[in-house]
Length: 66
Image (cartoon, rainbow, N blue to C red; front, side, top):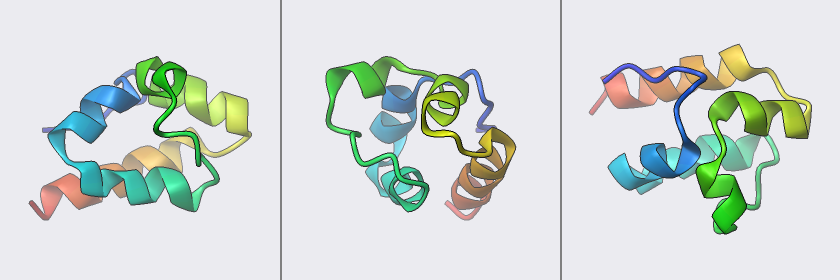
């Protein structure tokens, strides 16, 4: 599975809840909110002023280890 910036956060968390720690690390503490679960990684990073590519890279590393 390759993670892309266009993927929905809720779909990623449904695959592996442990991936949530990477969102929390960059200040996305609203993972339980229904709106955040429906956002793409790119939308969430834009809203939180964080580097989308860096998050995607971390998530891909996480899933590569699975």
